[in-house]
Each structure stands twice: as structure tokens, then as C-alpha cells.
Image (cartoon, rainbow over all chains, first blue to last red; front, top):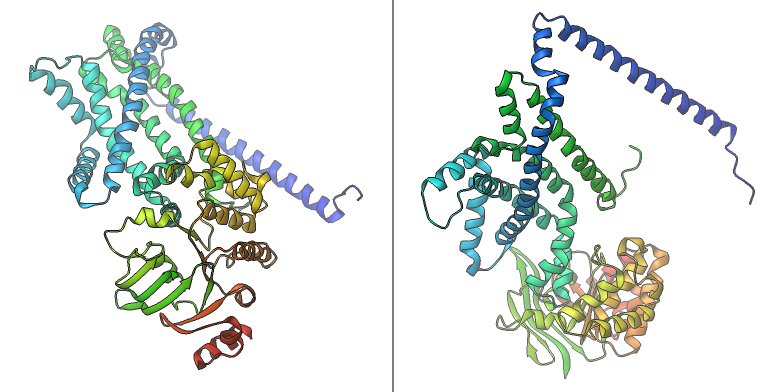
Length: 283
Length: 243
């Protein structure tokens, strides 16, 4: 077989597509530059801009605050990691409870449904206040009084309800024919769930699950309201010195820097799992 | 004594009666082919035998035991019956070999290495040995269906139920699956098959059963039912699928 040479027609098509691509790049670059210039001109010409720049974007102040804020962020990271593990365990348990059949499990089903309803509805900040200030005020012996623990508990309680729903959606997305096939082989309901349904469900919900963890990462900053020295609280203490708000911006940038890798990982996994959705072609 | 015996079986979905006073006996080693128009109840009948559907009335006996008794252990009954689906229904997250060894290991308590050996033998048997570690979506339709048959056969079932197993296949892949079924029949496997492949019914079936509105309208040797049907409805059905 001879080497394939694109026909004249195909060469003309390739050249056309290349011209189109070049044109698109030029337009994109042009529109971006125009927009940036407009924003810079707009913001820069406001009467308060020099003062805002001084208060929020002071480079020297940012460098000064960075070590303390970063140290606070380390607490956020630890809280987030430990909570993530607990959330996966509780969320999965709730999801399985909700899908159990049989009269004996009626109370479990109701509990799981009520739990997800309540904790998806309650504002996270409220749960943090209730647990962080309410429980230690009970003065029960044997319970920890550490605000980090109660803040973390509030995160776990709230996020478990979201993650449970994600898992449940995954479980219900597995086609009934998969269950039928497993049952036809003699697998019990529980074995079918364990070996056939859950492995497929978990794979399918990885992208939305990681999305929830991106969200958890930044919401871990809310425990600052309990007086825990995390990144936000550290920034707050820094701003109290001279009423310069730059440390808040530093904390914000650090949170963004932390979530970007997780977001990219989510995208990567979602893309790699494209085979689940079938090929969409170029359209 | 017949291996499978259906007496007065009825199944309905609401007001829609899909299977009605159905009687059928299948002897050991026999291959009975169910034919009939779409919606005549063929697939539902197979699902009732495998207890994937609960019958409204009547008795289904497997080797003399009433399996429709609500006190019967459905998981145990199913583990003795192989079922092959129209859409293969392989588990996409497991390799072909793991698909086949799942039930032996988890249901039949076979040791992992024994199950693997037996699974590989079974794959060799259906000509898929080199695909053992592939995922189902890397296989062609015919290969997937052969793997599904291997999965159903590895537990040495007493009865094999086949539900339109070639309907989702490209015409040139139908042959490989039918050849495999023919071999299984020759080895003495008892089979209840619903199909639109009249050639297969003619070649392999001991008896053909024509279903009409959920009833076995005409049952007999393929030569009689397919070539010299007594019932006008059978004749009408056959002339329609031939044209």
C-alpha cells in the first residue's frame, strides 16, 4: 500500500481550518485585551482606587502576613482531610440506608431521609454555631471542648447529607439490568450492592464528589467563627494590627491555590471516564 | 420426570395479562424454543422461571421442587439456573474473567484459584481465552455474548434460560453465538430459549412453542410447528416473519 497523501481537496480544507484557527486566536486575544483595558481604566479612574489599592493590595503587607496566614491554612488542610474521610464514610452509610429494602429497615430509611432533609436545609454557619458554642456550654464531662473538633463535626454533619445524595444518585444510576444479571447468578441483594452496584456507582460519582470536596476545602474556613486560628482567623488578626485588609486577600489567594489542583483533578477524572457516557464526536 | 414444569402460570402488570394459564414441561437435556410476536410474553416467561418476576398464580417446579413458593430461597434457586440476557449485561467494571468468577467465589464458595482455573477453562471453551483480562467494552457484541454465556455456564446450572441472545448482534456475529449454543445442547444442557432465529429453532430445538397472548398456542417438534402449523395464528406469524 502506498503512503497516503492528502488530496488537493483535503489540503485546501486543512489550510482553511488553519486560517480559521488563527483568526479565532486573534479575535480571542483582541477581545481579552480590550476587556482588561476597560476594567483597568474603569477601576483605576474611580476616586477611591488609590485608597482601595493601599488597603487591599499592599504588596509589603502581603509578604508580612503570608507566614501566619499560611500557618493557619495548614489547619484548614488538616481539618479538610480528616473531615473528607469521615464524610465519605457517613455519606455512604446514609446512602445505603436510604436504598435498603424490606420492612425491617423502615426506621433506617426514614432516619436517613430526615437527616439529609434537615442538614441540607440548615445553613452551615448555623450548624457550626450550634455545635461550637452549644455543645461545650452543656458542660458535659467526657466531651471534648476543642472548637476545632466541634467545627469539624459541623462540617461532617452538613457535608455528609450532600455526599449521601451524590452517592444515592450514583446507586440509582446503575441500570436495573445490572442488578438483574447479578441476581440471576444467585448473588443476594447485599452481594449485588457490594460487588456490582456500588463499584459502578462510586466510579460514576467521582466528579461531583470531588466537586463537593473543593467546596469543603473553602468552607473549612468557616470554623474561624469559633475563634480557631485558621487561615481566615489568622488574616483577621493580622488586619486588626493596622486595619489593612491585604491579609484577607492573601488568605483568599491561598484558598484558590489550594482548590485549583483539586479542580483540575476532578476535570481529569471526568474526562477519563468519558467512556461511561459514550463518544459524542466533534459536535 | 421433567426437569422444569409450569402449570397454570399467570403474570400480569396491572390490567395487562402477559402470561395466562401457561402449561409447559421441559425434559432434562431438552431444548425448547419459544417463538411468538413481540409482547407475546416470551421474555416475561423466562424472567418468571428465574424468579426475576413474581408470578400471580400457578406453579413452577424445578426438579420436582416448587420454586414459586414464597418460602423458597430465591437466591439458591437462581444459582441453579443460568440466564443469558439480550443485552449481555456483563459487569463493565470487572474484567471478563472476574465477571465469570464472581458468582463461583461469592455464591458457590469456590476457592479463588479453583474458580480462576475453571473460569479460564470456560473462556477457552467459548474461544475467549486471550480476552480474560479485557474489560467487556473492549469486546465485540458476539464476544460479549459468548462471555455472558460462559458466565452463566460456569456454575454448571441445571437449566439455561436464553432471552433473545442474538437480537442485539450484527448478522455476521449471530453465527458464532448460535454455534456455541448448539454445542451446549449436544452436551446435554437443558435449555429454554426465546428467539427470532427460526433457523436455530429448526436445527436445535426438540420442541417449539408458539406463544400467542401469553398462552402456549401450539407446541410440537420444529418440523410440525414451523412447516405444518395447525393453528392459523401460527401460520400467520410465520408468514409475516418470512416475508
